Structure formats: C-alpha cells, structure tokens
Amino acid sequence: MNDALLALLEQLDLERIEQDIFRGTSRPSVVPRVFGGQVAAQALVAAGRTVPEDRPPHSLHAYFLRPGDPGAPIVYTVDRIRDGRSFTTRRVVAVQHGQPIFHLSASFQVYEEGMEHQEPMPYAPDPLTLPTAAEMLPRYADRFREPGVAQRLLEARAAVDLRYVDAPPFGSVGEPRDPRSQVWFRTNGKLDGAIDQPLLHICLVTYVSDMTLLDSVLLAHGRGGWAVGDVVGASLDHAMWFHRPFRADDWLLYDQESPTAQGGRGLGKGRIFTADGQLVASVIQEGVIRVPRG
Image (cartoon, rainbow, N blue to C red; front, side, top):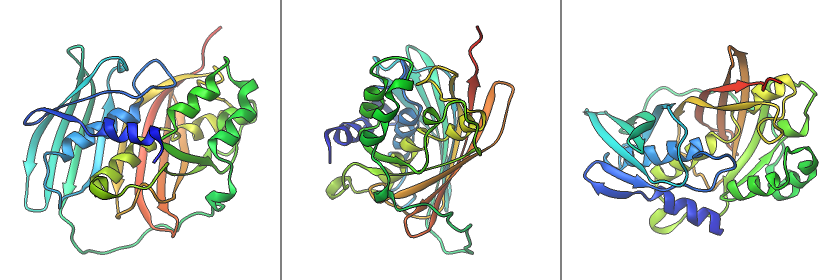
C-alpha cells in the first residue's frame, strides 16, 4: 500500500465516541470543502458498524446538504431504523459546527439465492495499456486555471489507481462529445489481513464513485470542469446499489453516462463491472453544474 491509501484507511476507521455515534476526519481535497465521496464512505462505515457482519449493504441513498469543512471533525449519528429477518435499515446524519452537512439511508441484507441476470459489460481496453494519472495529468497542465492543479489532483486521488479510457473533460475543452465516459480503478495496494473485510471494499468503492460520475455531463457540452474554471458545481444526491461481491483492490470498470442536464443540474448514471464482466454496482448522482456569468 502507498501512504495515501494507508491514510485513507485510517480515515475510514472511525472513532466510536458513543454506542451509535462516530467521529471522522477529512483528507485533503482539490476544492475547499470535504470531498463528497469521503463523507459518503465514512457514513456507510458508521452505519455498517451497527449491523452484523453477515449483512453487507445492498443500497444507499444520500443527500449532500452543506459544504463540509475539511479542517473540522465530522460527527456521524446512526439511527437504527429497522432490524428485520432479512433486511436491516440505518439512517446516518453527518454534523459539523452544529449543522447537518450530509444525510444517508442504507439498507443491508442477509445473503440469499435468487433469480439472476445482468447487462453485458461494454468493451473497454485493458487498464494496464492506459496511462496512469501521473503520466496523464501533466499533459493538460497548461489548460488548468492555475498552477498546481495537476499536482493537487494527483495528491487527492493518490489512494486510487484511476485510469481514463478516453480524454477527461479537461482534455477536450470546447469539443462536445458523446455524454459517456469510462475509467478503470483499483486501490493503490492490496487489502489483506485484518482490514480485508467486505464492508471496507464497499466503502472504498463508494469513495471512488463520486470522483468522475458527472464527467459525462461536462463532455456533452465541451466543458472542462472546476479545474479549467468553466463551470462551478457540487454533488446534490447520490444513490448506489451493490449487486454482487467484489474487491476494491482488483480492477473495476466504471462505465458512466449522462441522460440529461437542465435547470442548473446534471444527472449521471454509472455501472461498475469487475474485469471478468460481473456487474457489481449501479450508481446515480445529480449535481449542480452552473456556467459562471461574466
């Protein structure tokens, strides 16, 4: 594991300060607020700590209410909504400075056999044939709105090996494209020993799921995003469904598209596949995406 992944794992190992109350800290972000994937992953950790280990999460639904302060701890309060024979439901509120900044509902299920089918995995090149972030980002340094953005991106994403199949939004500014994007990702190191737990793998994928999902909205309009300075935005809500077991330290394909944008908001849909073609998660997110005036 690299140092960034170790630091991320430490932040996901929340401090329990009461039976159903936990406290977490924040990682450096490329914008002056807490990264949404971090607070979602930490909230899911908090919920999972109150559920038996034989019930992994199968879905989450969340709202980002206020920007988080990266310099202050976040307190997560868990409500035990329901404990059924097959399903368990938890609600989590994340609080900073006395105000809720994030709300999550998560459902957990005991494994059971049932009908199975899935969409086929779309084509994507082998991830090892694609450039790493360290190889790709310097190519676009002259397009970023200020010096140092490429380095900040590298540092913020250093816990994850994330590789774009095609040029990212900031690599094709002014050139509208099909509103689809793909990235391969895995953690920058293998998870083993005491930390190799199904809940942790799910929380790590939740963390990554917020990194690139709205890229396809930007691609449709030839916009580069916050790094270029031609839009401002933030996540509004986020939903995930976990279909099959997976490992966050194995390659996963994140296939993303945007069916619509309107009213200062854009919608992103994603499917996450294992390298052997298993559909393991589905994601939907809406975000504020505004074009600056003047």
